[in-house]
Length: 114
Length: 112
Image (cartoon, rainbow over all chains, first blue to last red; front, side, top):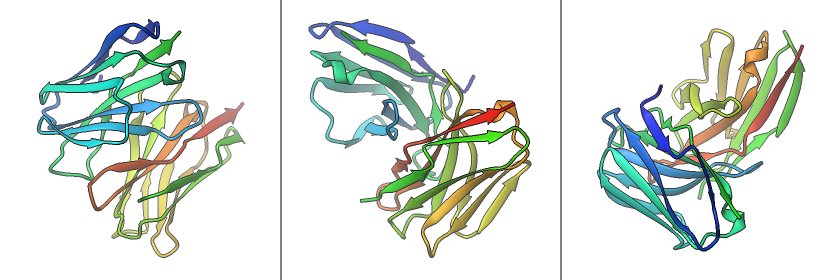
């Protein structure tokens, strides 16, 4: 167990639904990330939070809305998604003050949009 | 911005043989190059990394080599075993904002 936990592990949602993904880390890290992993594509960085402040938003559509209430928790709120948003969503954390340190990943949420 | 290319996308080797995966990058200011392994249904995990002040690093059957001049680095796995079957991702740390830029991944298949 790496200390990064994501829930739920699997999610099926309709295009009109609203759902949220949750990520929790107990490693004492101060940076958290959302990645999208689609088949045969590089890991796509979506959002970065350093010390609870969002520092990166890599041109992600507004139907994805992140929230970081504290340095241990990260959410990804989803609404009116499209079928092409189906993917594995990975959360990761690291120690922001030491950039070349290991990124610890959660096991991911497998999202299917129908 | 940084661009990372990883080859091959799929690699099939006989058990016991060696496997080599290569990544090229574009930003010469990058100084940190990790490799992650993702087994089927599991999370990516760091297996080895290298910093730009060295040209090679080894950890048992795994090694990484870095050529900063040519802007490429490679993962070498010797005496491959079934448990080496996974997807391997290279990454490059951007010096400007400390973001990791990832390769597309290589699916390594070890044939018995």
